[in-house]
Length: 219
Image (cartoon, rainbow, N blue to C red; front, side, top):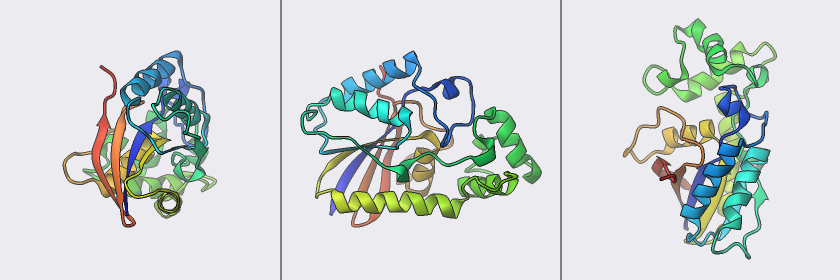
């Protein structure tokens, strides 16, 4: 069986605007975030989505609702939330300034910026380092993170039908992590995708392939 996932990052939030770590913590969409979600909705309106899912974070749910309300199949679409596709949990570092948090996590290993991931260290390594740096050790490491994400894909396998087109609203680091692990080689996912951008995923017989990363839906 094969189906397509239109993976969209939520619209801009207040924590995005202020450059703060936002994993399981949640802030509302800014007016600009609502606007870009509406523009993305217009671009996707003619795609006849069969199913619609969002992370259970309010920022993802609100973005998903905006897109569903504009879709050609809106009368049949019923959004479902999936905790499996939450953002990575940053534990102690939730809400902290992004540069400060990554300096504390990466500094002991000789690095300072998460943008160096993919060339000097892996995203999975950064997750493990974050859990180690968290004084409570609550942040997700790579094993915990992928166990959750894999369960999410397995759930989609159960509910999708062959050739289904699925809308999934999730998060920047999650989309980047999936693209790094399952990319088809046609792109390099070094930075997080823009808010309300599109990443296309093919799920075929239990295997994941990312074919497009961070495609802008804004003219």
